[in-house]
Image (cartoon, rainbow, N blue to C red; front, top):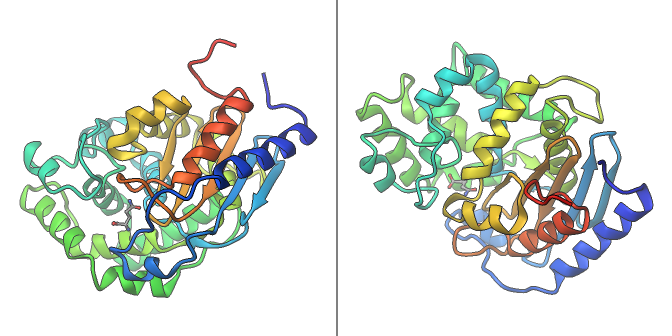
Length: 313
Ligand code: GLN
């Protein structure tokens, strides 16, 4: 079936917002210095339906950096260009069971980046975007993520500079991949483009539309533009189901029953195939780097809207 009628979804989005608001648990990310300056009380919730309807509550129009959520959409763009087999072989689809920025995971797997949702796999994926230069690679990513959102997404220069000044660990990951022969491009140029993609500004409502584009077989339901094929949208959701919330991906799937992707600025996108996308934003995070209020609001919506893919009624 499809989602309930307009008024019911509006009411449930408001209820999910209030349910999320009750928590003040978690801590804001500080390892990227600029993120530590964000108001921890910000909280927005949005649902976008595959018919193009968009519902919002709270700070759903406040912009924040997309961070790791970019990984899902860059992965889709690369799958579109290079195909299922090559990407499965080069980037992988299995969870590491370790933190998103783990170097140990690379070492344990003979240099393989393991999956596109940890930093190693995301840097390898960004390096696979076909382009003659880093500038062209960045332009293709900015254009591609903007097509998912249905509006031009811009870089937050302060977040970018703050991360670029402090991302020694990601540079180490890129260089380690190069040492294992797992990356063909200049690894530091790939890390720089990756840092830029993470600094793109989105709102919770943008995330809902980006998710609804994957839910709608790769067609943005607001603009009507096809961004990726239905097969690529399906492959992206399958990877998110096992890796989207890092080492907490199993708990997420157990509680929510939907593919999702989180970022350390506090965003989470969740996708209900054939029905719509959920976008949430709240900066306080659990120990794995996932928004606490965002997880609560998403869980509420998944249950209230009947979205869990494993539920039979
Ligand atoms: N840009 C961040 C990093 O590489 C993204 C991490 C995240 O959102 N989990 O550390």
